[in-house]
Length: 256
Image (cartoon, rainbow, N blue to C red; front, side, top):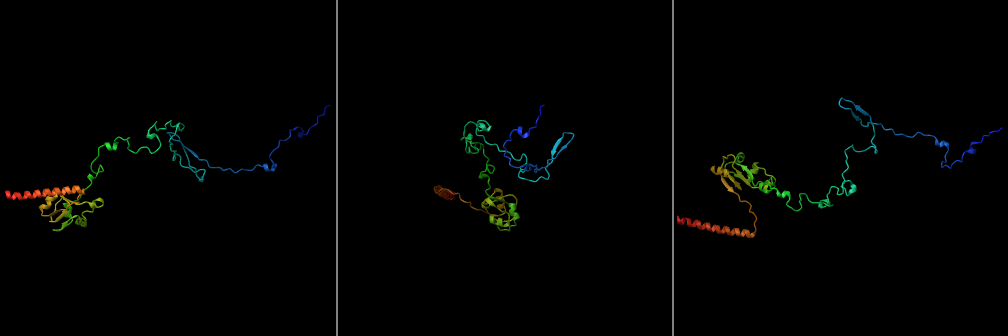
């Protein structure tokens, strides 16, 4: 009769492998870990006769942290980079063309430049005056009508000039107009005899002022600067014509 003997387990199991664990079983007790639960956004589905639309409610009660800060969706866009080769994904020339000044680095050409030919802004016709930006359309005088002088309550014999009109408040020139002379226009009527001093008079104003017996004085303007040689020739011409007029005036009575 064969008898079986029980062998210990440690005798037939392989030897244990070396382990770096140096602790005991007490250190392997399970401990609860700290979990951060964030509230999930609630999704409401609005049903209508047309089509269902899903609307997400904003996160309420969530604190701002560095990990959840950010711009609104769609408010920031990446700038398009200028390609520098085939690997940029914009083609070999990246939209700059094959050759030329505009395809190379640097400032390029100025605005309106057409390679040396007459540019467009110089080919088109220009407007005269203020619309064209030229000084031909700027006012050359401070205009005052006869009705304005009548309303200023001047007395008979008073002097009407640029300074007196400023004192009466008829004109208040500012800026460029402060250096302009006075010109009298003929709109309206005048009932007083005055002494009017101005740089220029319109034809109608001159007729109306002379008809009521006003004294008119045309003030000299600023002489335009000319070269000394030109001024000398002008003086010689004036002297020549003055002698000629004197001779003509002297011969007229004799012939009569």
